[in-house]
Length: 108
Image (tube, rainbow, N blue to C red):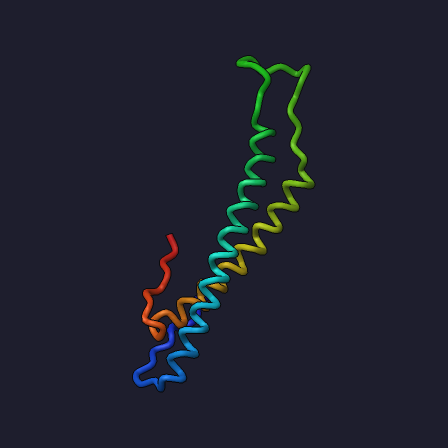
């Protein structure tokens, strides 16, 4: 569930600085979490790619690439956790975007 965006009709300078600060902290969290998610997705992709390889154009059974299922599962769990944190950070950033004079982030 998306958090409501705060609409502030009249703010004191102190409130505005507070909202800008909250937006800035959330934006840094989003940037950090996007980088972490990217790295984890890349690691998971490498594990899955290995399992999709074949040794020649004809599938043989004398040499078969393996899938480290436990490692893939662990990476997927980490990825899900980071993605959940990222979604919450985006909500937090968007909650203060307008008050900070910024446009809300769009999920694509």
